[in-house]
Image (cartoon, rainbow, N blue to C red; front, top):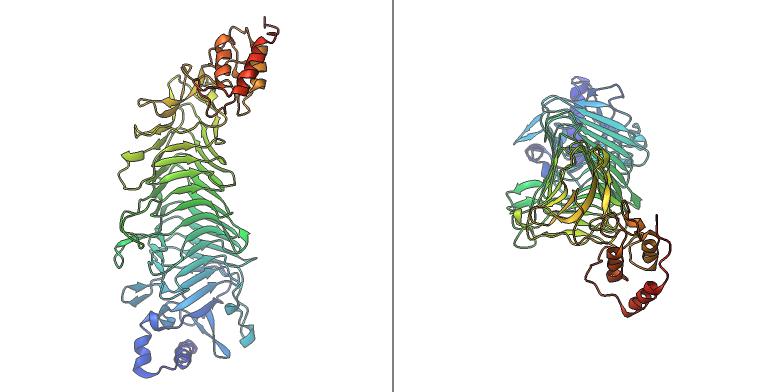
Length: 571
């Protein structure tokens, strides 16, 4: 008998002895993965680039413990009917490009996969074998599928870099599908990288697998490069439950007492629009639970975040799926973002930003909520800037999120207005639902404030009640009527210091700024500006209203101020 045949026979016999099953019953159960005990297989195929993941007969590329000794196999799919967890370590770099049909629709099926690992189960020195722990790299190409299946608790997971001081790298160039029934974690304990240039990756698809979420940088450092193809988290429909399989997707998450750092590069700026597609039916969070995340959306990237319309497990009705930027940054440079839920920016205790770069691409969300730690940024080019579209009830997906809410300390960043080569009104936030009116204003830009000049030297003013339905946030060239703001020193309130600013600037006939006492952007500092200060005294800049009434203490201060000498007029 050839050595390889003996090894395979010994491996099978070893399994039967461990399970206590013999004869025809053992043969039958070998085809039923749910009845098998998963074996831990450690890569021992060497470190040469693109060593076959499935070896030819005689190439013992995998090793495992059997009793008090070790055994080997060249095929982790056919051995033990695929009821195995494979660990790619020992600085190995295997290539998977073969088809292994196990029957019953199970092709290239395994119950768990770890790339870059220091798990004790692959340290076989105690039974006379090698220590197969370490970093690893897996490459998949051709028309090669892979299924990491969920059978019982703790299986169906694909972990890349699952321990400290190890790195894991996966390159998916296959035109076929990677199915991960359980967890997909890129960077969990160490540095992990997943680069997808083709095909489809579906993770968290088994409804029976509990507490499953997908993460990039879960307590460590992870990067997912989706250059081309599709990444899908959860599933549109599980026939057993007649509902979506909903799974959180986290870019940067806190785990095991460590703050992870995740980077998701959606698109590479080379392919057609939407050719790098991310789809989910649940929450998308950048910076989860203390972790930090970065999401870069390029011209060929697309996010499709869908309302879960079917009956949920807890009862009747669907649920919305928010896009949450909690601790980190989203950079959108072109591309497509379409979410049926709310976009929340900076609603926690850490700084969070959504930055829109240039005038190409699209961004559609049902509602917008920028918290006190949130920044919404627009970098203009010669053609202007891509507007954010707020759908409200014009989105018929069935979720209930609605509104445009700007926190008292929310920040608006406007960059490169000087590149804009037109005097046309620029829409920053377009409220498509006529019933939705922005609540609040950005802390650093009051209603009607000048925001700078374009390449033609024209001054632009911000208007929170612009557009056809008077509910869009726009930049326009005409001063905003009713937009007086007497917070001249821009410190967030209207007080005596603002009166001193008006007093020093009083009499300026043209070219005055708000810092000099111009409340209504007409370039002059005069009695109209004093009246605005008088009516707004004691109020917060974000809520100042021309019709507000000062408190009694404020009236006393106003009287004192008005009877004081007016000071020098400017020439």
